[in-house]
Every structure is written in structure tokens, then in C-alpha cells.
Amino acid sequence: MKLIRLLAAFALLVASALPALAADAVYPPGLRLGMVPLVGLNTAKTFPGFESEDGSVKVLITELPPAAYGEVVSAFNSNSAGANGVKQDKIETPAGLAYFTTESGKSGDTPVRRYSMIVPGAGFSGYVAVQIPENATKIYTDEAVRQMFASTVTRKRVSAEEQIALMPFKITDLADFKDIRTLAPGASIILADGNESAGYESKPFMILGLIGATPQQADDRARFAQEAALQIPGVRESRVTMSEPIRINGQQGFETRIDGVSGKDKTPVTVVQWIRFSTGGASLRIIASAPRDQWQAAFTRFRAVRDGIQPKG
Image: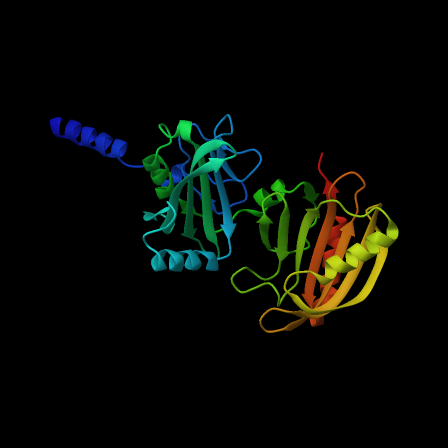
């Protein structure tokens, strides 16, 4: 019995000495990167990450392209001593080897301590930026932030339901698209037949999101829609084949189609852009692309998704 009591006491001692386990990590909604937030920090209301009750302590969490991690590692290795008061360091995490910097600066007139960390993910780079006002650094010390970074974990995927719930509109018809991923949580989302690792261009995909102020006059809207379509990232050798006003769910809209090539293999694609204009707020913009030999079947699905987008509330 004495041995059992000694072992139990030892187990409690070890548990109290270890950092929080990965099971305690919190993932900001829609992200594949999470960590154990420091005491006093809760999920932020206006950005992905955590913040203190008064908003003075901020932990921004986001995802960057997969190549970003390698670029940061190369920069660290080429200048391991840091510069201009920036301290460089690295730490092992459950997600992999993380690289981070520490520096002092100002937010307006307020002296602050800043930390930036990058960590590898499956098909992305996880990035964390922390800002702590100087008067809170006795609580949120360099070592405390380091321990928070050490708890960083990643998950392979975020459920479609979680990602769609973040959007400012309802998506009632997914048209059999299986790969669902937010490009910017709460702002834009991609629905695809392909996937992130293999690339999206060789199969049909859609990007749904909101854009800010748009023109109110019909002529201005036509010009705006065509210019926006010709600037769609990833589409080259673009040529407008159709551009005309339409009604989308009873609202003023504009449809523009372009032919071009996309991806490293220069896949011939047809792309449609729909803009559903709003008179009092952000307008809905939909970009849908398919290889030209898959266009007819894909276009029917694109319209099903478009017509199933409804306001929340």
C-alpha cells in the first residue's frame, strides 16, 4: 500500500511539472493550427486567435502557403544572430520544429513585446503573432509565451460544417463538392473536386466570398466586373467571352466568362465570375473554374451552388 501511495504521489508530481497536453489545445474556428492559450486569454471575437478580456493582449493565428516555412528557416540560418534587437530562437512542438522571434516595439504610444512564430503543417505553414503591452509582461513573460508556442499542434482537416458556419451567408447546396476549405476564415471559402496537395486547376472548383464597395451605376458595374474577372489570380492568357447583367436570387448581378489557361501544366479552362451586387453592404463574388472539356457538367453544379446561397438570419 505504501508503494502505491508513493507511485501516485510521483505521478501527480510529474503531471504538475509537464506542460499542458495537446488534448488541451484550442483551435480557432476554421483553422488547422491550435495551441494551449495562456491563462486569461479567450477566443478572439474579431480575428482568428486569442485575446485578453480588455483586448490588450493579442495572439493572432493564421495559415500561410507551405513554402513560407522553408523561407523563414533559410532566413534564420543565414542570420542566426538576428538583427536590430530581434532575438531569434527555435523550439520543438508537437507540430514540428518552430522558429520564432522576440522583439520590443510600440503600438501607437504603448510599448509592447512582440513575438512571431512559424511552424510546419500538412500543406500549409502555421503562423502566430503575439503582442503584449509592457505593463502585462510580468504576467505574460517571455518564458510563458515560449511554453504556449511549445504546445502548438495541427490537425489534418477542419470539418465542412465548421468552415461553412463561419461564412456570413448560408451555403445550402454543395453540389457534390467534397473538398471544402476556408481561404480566409469567415471571408472566403473554396469548394473543389481536387485537393490542396494535388492542385485544384485540373478539376472544377469554386471560390465564394464577399467584396467591399461596388459601383451602383449599370455602366460602372459592367466595367468593374470585366476588370475583376481579368485579374483573377492563377488564370493566364485570359479572354472575355461573355459579360452581361443578370438577376441572381432576385438581386442585381453580373456574369462574366473568360477562357484562359491555369496551373503549371497550362490547363485550358473556362471561368465564370458572378457578382451579386448589394446596395447597402458587401457584395457576393463567386469565381468558378473548370477544365474546358469538363465545363458543361461543371456549370450546372456551379449554378446550383450559386442559387443555394442564402442570407443568414
